[in-house]
Length: 303
Image 1 (tube, rainbow, N blue to C red):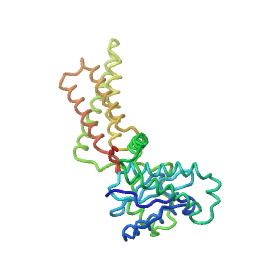
Image 2: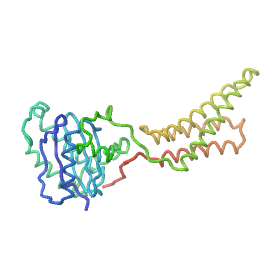
Image 3: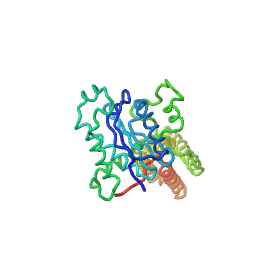
Image 4: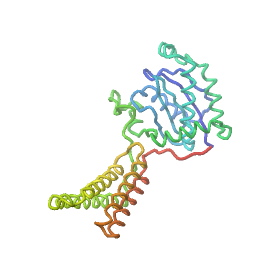
């Protein structure tokens, strides 16, 4: 059964626990996972603001904002979109309930233990997905996770959390690290080679078109532009395949559309088979970009 098992709120600066849900679970694996949670709470400032850690049958998810971290343990099959919606609700309520000055001046652990009441109520709601009434918020979170998936903590990160790599400077700069993509497949390599070939052919024809214009003033300079735009679109698709980018799929479709338009304009200089080849390679490259998703991409989930 998929469910939220435990949640806590901590101060990012020093890992001081501010509130937590009451825990009646005695499962050894869950208790071990909660140890990782305690280690994480002391190192939140070293990680991106939205992360996931897989530990056997459980997942640890956390977010951080305005100096406060929100962590939770759930079963491994619990949907990511629901997990981060749960944390988002805790964050919104905590910010409204407690001001920044009070949070920063807290000295004792669990100074806001009364917040446990809200955590428990929210936990019960999220453990009964059919009773959730926040479908719009879930849809918004699903879109946000697709655009910026949570960073998957690695075994190396876990060893650092457990104290095997003390005083290691933070690897992450800015809001979040560069999103890693899935391993390259053979079809992806073939599509890149063909796309580079098409780009090279366009470049070569563009250079010849410039030479022709220099020799004959009546030549159409727009052909040169079309050839070079085709080259740029092919190479940009290769870049999108190799590196993660926001709106990556949309950009690949726009590049493919540019390839189609440039070839339509060049129909007088190319035969039908050449045009079909360039368009087919562009379509194949667009498909490969869409298939090569970021690691840790959240699955679709509809309540």
